Length: 572
Image (tube, rainbow, N blue to C red; front, side, top):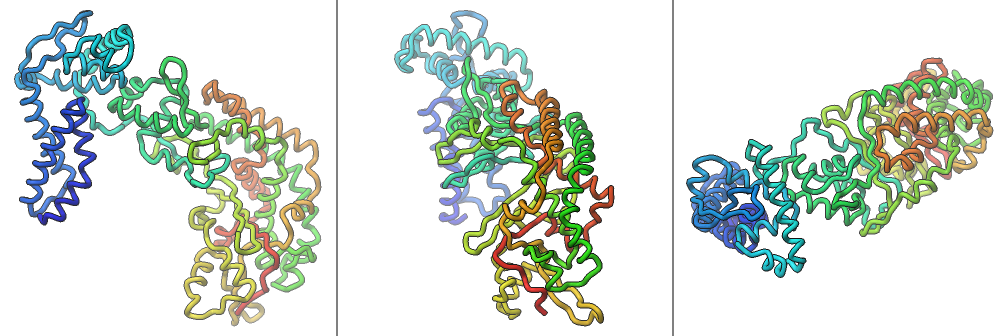
């Protein structure tokens, strides 16, 4: 292998090799010496090798061999723990080579040390491996002698219990594997990301951090308890917890234990079935009370627009400044009902109530972290909901986009691709500023691919083809648009508050006691939420108030653009 390539590989693996050495020796001085030996062997071996198919395995094998020789040479005449049950543990001479040949007790004992807390691990290593007396350890660690004695006793008890109960050797490099495989299936936040723009996914990108948060959600646990639960060294857990503590995702409680500071909704079939039934029942009631209010507003326009073709007069919806693609009132109703229920069914000041649960992180974020858990294999099953509203304000053009994403009804719409698409291109098209030339082909492809722009034939002969904008657009502000609708009756408000209470009663038993106050607040304004709206749309389809959508409407449905002008009827 060329020297430059070998140098690059060694540089990439220096930290990993040192970490490996530290775990093997439990001593900084020994770790530095061992890592130097491993680097020397790896480097020489790389220079002599032509092809290496798996560099990780290759370096790991060399590291294991070097570490084994080092331990045999350096620790051959050292003394190890023999009887963990005595108050004053006798030290006996042991040939490590023979011990390893006989059984795996020594390996198991070293691995058990990884599960001790930091201070306990230090005391054990200093006392039994470095052979320091208790008063010397107290002086070195700057803690009282009696504290050293207590930590030593606790560490011995934990080692004894773990050694007796665990009959299999667990290496410190085992991956976290849980039988229930619970991880975060969704992560979000309520509040502000600040200048850092770091949301929850930034802090929980690794599996271990997620497992720690989920494990310590219902019951506070120590680092040792978590380490044993997931079969990883305590030092790994402690490092992750320090990071989560520093950023407000965990808090330390009495007894050197830690509790997760995230609002986590856990997947549960029984709970989701109950919620589904109650939302269907309330959707039925609301459809009977609310829909007449909507249709009474629309009736004049419905009579004018049904069966007609595109014209300047009808597209403006009685001069109110509302553009409806193809004058399809059904398509308009989908977006209208979703938007009005989202905005007008807010009967409690949920946003203000949540503020007291929002804390500031060190990087400028101020938000409440929220997540859903489940088995990775079941992320897409029927009990996992993916309904949410997003609003985008364009800083370059007078545009505001609202969109509701419902997995059940607009499966073609993807938030990542759709919502961060440059809507200014559509606005420029509306103003006639993008000619159909070769230089603009990428812009037009983006509009066509997302069905924001659709090509259709022109009646009566259907020979000419024209493009039309395929999204509801209004020149009205959000408030003016909503003011067109009647006030929500008190009866609906009472129904909404009753639903909130029922949802809280269902959900609270699946949350830890210390999260019940937050659970009550999170279960406010359920009528305006996406989960309820999904069932409401189902009921309206069943009652034939809403018709099934056309294929080209699946991506742009449940979306309204607020702009300063309406699009032209067509651009051939």
